[in-house]
Length: 255
Image: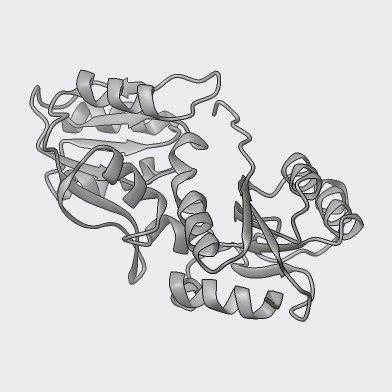
């Protein structure tokens, strides 16, 4: 399959164009010719030298990543930009990226994957950003305490050397759970307004402790990497169904 055709099919599946005005990431085909031939696709959370080199070792022609190398444009190809672009070019590998579209996709996205893991019912979009959503919410059907929620995430997520850290400030019984993966504590205020009992995200920021405590809401920090493997794994399953060889490059950061 030609690289441009594959990128277009992924863009269509993910609704990439709808996020163009709100995402700093240059989503879509970031590196490589659209006319290149693709038979083997690698998938990773981060487009880093390690994941690019490991994808090349696996024989991939294209790397699909959640975090790419172009955020708001590239003015100079130096430093980490140079190292990553050089690794892609040296290995004759293209790079396709999906950031917020893969966070917010209600079936294949990162938040949808966490919601599935937690077996949430009555799922709906959550995490407003402009006219789009970057997360999902739902009703807890089984993990109705903060301890049970933490234990489920800790046992199932690839946190590397990290731990699942709860900010235990909410009610004893959890009904509504909101999810924005990665760095999602900026949506605490929306969670409060929508009567959500627990916000699950990846990593924290200093202000989140006091906002959560003062509002009486749980926040669960389950790891940026660990909460964002679901989307690329889902895309791997999709591309595999299109008849291409696929490989997942697991490179947990513990963060």
